[in-house]
Image (cartoon, rainbow, N blue to C red):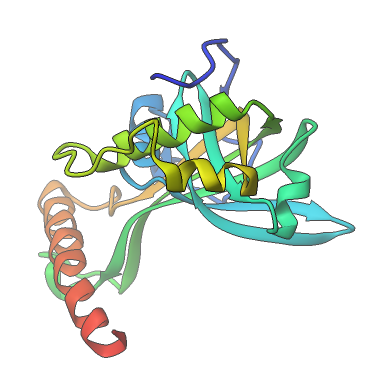
Length: 214
């Protein structure tokens, strides 16, 4: 991807480095599947710790060459921790929903299905204004896909005026783990039913929720 570092990094796709309580059937070890979650649901929860207190920010992160690139407002208190190789924890959220026993063909109890990716890494600030500008353009291009209705041009004056108020950072991933709880312990017919319910619930619940709050 344009604007991202090309140095390869070693990443552990592990079951034990990050504590999730995942039964083996819910542990997702397929690297491509984990990356797909990150690319499809790029809004991440970013967690740093200072003086035993967590600082949490929600930002889109873009995957490239085994690393993540993000941008943060310089006035965000967490910005001071996103540099110098500090440790960081990042969470990505895929689809989720309640699964009623009524969708199954066999007798079951209520449950909740979801897709999550947790990672740990080292975060470093990227000081170059040219790199920051290019990464903003690249991130916009990625997020506008596939229609690309908007293009952030390099000579955009509004972007240029804001470069001094944005910090770019890079996360080198050290541990990456996924938890895909998708009724894998059920029979094939019930697994398919749970999949259809996950799809239906996510499509319908978004409109109902927005009608209530917005």
